[in-house]
Image (cartoon, rainbow, N blue to C red; front, side, top):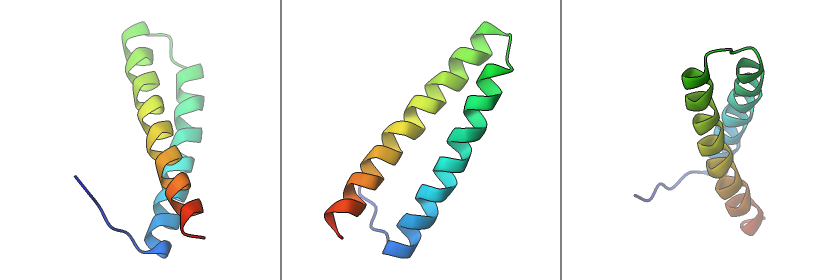
Length: 62
């Protein structure tokens, strides 16, 4: 799948994902249930991966 975003849309998406990432880190640290913590960590890794690709793409277009 390919998604084309404007610079403004890309910046907004990066900000949203960074905010959610910070929230996930806090949530993971407060979670005791191992299965739930594992799912949260998986989501964290996915968000990090998407953020890295968006930021790399953003740097290429600057």
